[in-house]
Length: 296
Image (spheres, rainbow, N blue to C red):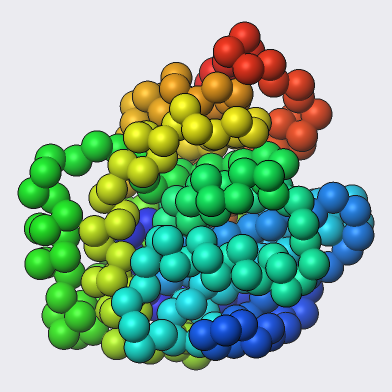
């Protein structure tokens, strides 16, 4: 099992929809796509997979067209030999949406996946009905030397030898809530075969080191014209909620929800609250520059 950067593997064997594969230009990606109606697409975080949203998609089944993919280098998708980037992930997401015939969607992204869906929304704003950012990367401004430091420290040869030993300490650091959902995640992580391998995961960490400490959402907040929901764990130890609040203050159409007693993985730690929050967001009318709701 690997959990780091706030994300772990933990591929669930009880995910409610079958895994399929789509042949894209650069390789095959694993995905799920089920139901009819308005399209809601889920994008996982660093070295995660789409099953991390298991307890969020289940309550929405039958009401929406639900879909998600394993990003390249992650889960069961192809493992690039070239560098993984947030921009490349956004291009892959948009290509996959084309392949699935989804013209206009609500995008839901967690952590690094939040940065991916935000980049996709900036590249193709006409295709994004709403944006949901859960514990998203890209919201914090770091010291100028941080990108260099991150890339220097996260060397693949070192990570591939240490990730497995860091798993449980990182899990203790990331999870705040302890309940049936987090226990299931740990069990799935321990029971599953390794997908991807340690070397493949180490490559993803190193490739994305610079991107993940880049304040792309903060710097482009004014460009998001669609309604945006910002969801944060009150006790997120990786990305402080002050960073999210700073971004929310700059977004033209935003609702921010802080979930008490929750860490960096709200969709695993506190899925019921995440579902209620998204349902409320879907029913909201957010007027630009007028309605800015901060819920705590």
